[in-house]
Image (cartoon, rainbow, N blue to C red; front, side, top):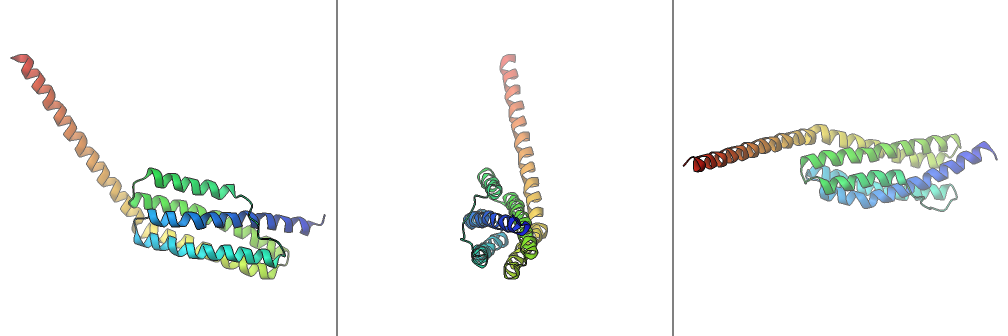
Length: 197
């Protein structure tokens, strides 16, 4: 078997994996948007959902350019990342800390996709598939832009808000502990004075 035939097979296999990954994201992004407290983060997820739907169509076009059927292969890597995000949304109360966690999860997604599209792009270039290269390069640039937007949101206030929320929670816990300790101390002194009578 020729080396380019093997690389082409690898390209198609990875494309099927990526196709499934993108379809999983189409389902996950609305849930992430709903869980977000920050209006800017919610808008970023909603905007990236539209882009991701475009990525699905673009992958389908790449299959067509390669003369292949658009068929998905289960992407367990993306399934794991999506599952971690679902767990976080179930465990964490809505607020800045959850927003910070959603950004971290979304950036894992973006980095996973950037690695996939980067490889696909390199292989398409090596195979001389110029039309395919254009499609993949466009998607890779959108994934990079989404990652940069998430970093900007995190550094532009969401991480600071999460730290502030943590401080408030610590203050509330400390106040509750002091109140509990005073209550316990009063209870003990009443017991002592009753016994002393």
